[in-house]
Image 1 (cartoon, rainbow, N blue to C red):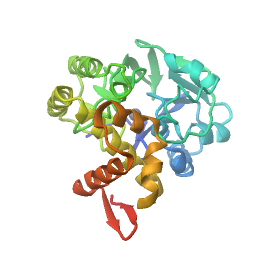
Image 2 (tube, helix red, strand yellow; image 1 turned 120 degrees about the vertical axis):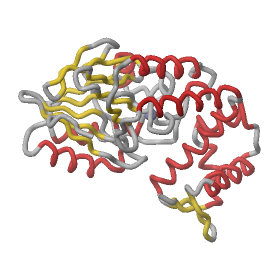
Image 3 (cartoon, rainbow, N blue to C red; image 1 turned 180 degrees about the vertical axis):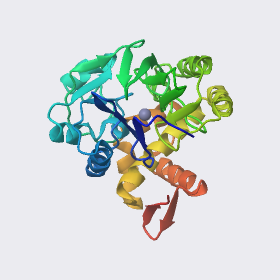
Image 4 (cartoon, helix red, strand yellow; image 1 turned 45 degrees about the vertical axis):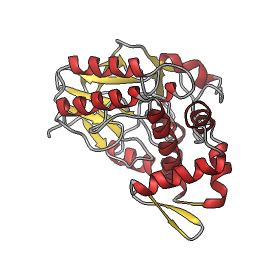
Length: 303
Ligand SMILES: [Zn+2]
């Protein structure tokens, strides 16, 4: 798979999103910056890719903690950098509205950063001396954008399309809509002439048709029984916690889960478990899928 020499894909794990560094003649940029606890590593990796140049711009496809957690450290170390967020998010960032930013809702953390610029759907953006277009991609997140370079057939898909699926459809958990939006986003991607997808997580891939088919079956599966989406949300949020902490004392888990508003909402509207039962259920789900193991009184992350 050949990518233009003006772009560097930094493939990260699942706690931190991938970062895509652009080295244009006159301008450098990074798309998405990972999670807060990996911020030092993000700075190191991005600086290495920049090879002594200053960072001119940060673009966030959406403001989930694993996509903008490195913004602050990059801003602190590159004092001329400008930060672009989806237009619907600017005001929330500028006033740092915790209730509207998703970090607290997910039980996650993001160091406060600033933003002064926006991306509108349809905006043309020059990255790595190539023209990209921002496309609105709601579903996983209502404000998310994906970036498409027609000339090279490259799509930066964020969490709207992965090689095998897409990110949790969070809006459905707390009473907003997301299934229809997800389907429309997949259809929009299907209309583009994409050769390579650089997803928010996982390695870049080229069999776009296959991934779209997988994603379409997945949305059908979730929409048929929306409780499945809620179950997935709880599992993903616990796994994220575990990726961050590596181990969690089992006795603390019910309280910890209760402290995550989206888990509480998923349980209230869809699962209807008691707190201890919810913790047991979630632990067993992660164990069954090989994402965690229990030893003694602790739950441990398994990569
Ligand atoms: Zn996301």
